[in-house]
Amino acid sequence: MSHPLTCVLTLLELLQPNAGLAGSEPAVPLDTDVRTVRRYVAHLRDLGIPVQAERGRHGGYGRPVTTGCRP
Image (cartoon, rainbow, N blue to C red):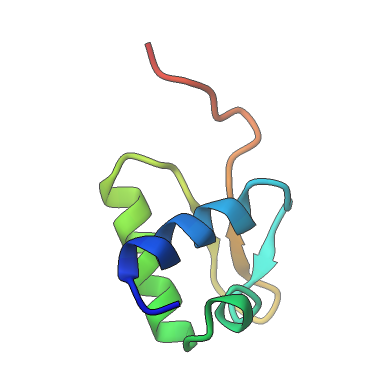
């Protein structure tokens, strides 16, 4: 995957069914590094898509359970 938009949308797809992904887990299917995953998360947030991030050893990324469509 080379196009950034494709990677951002793939990350969104990875976050949908999972309660949480460790910080390095999304990097494998995206064929990138952890720093780039952080940049993609920032792009999703800029688009208004809520993504939770937990720091630390057991941290990672996830989507809030109560996320719904905005009116």
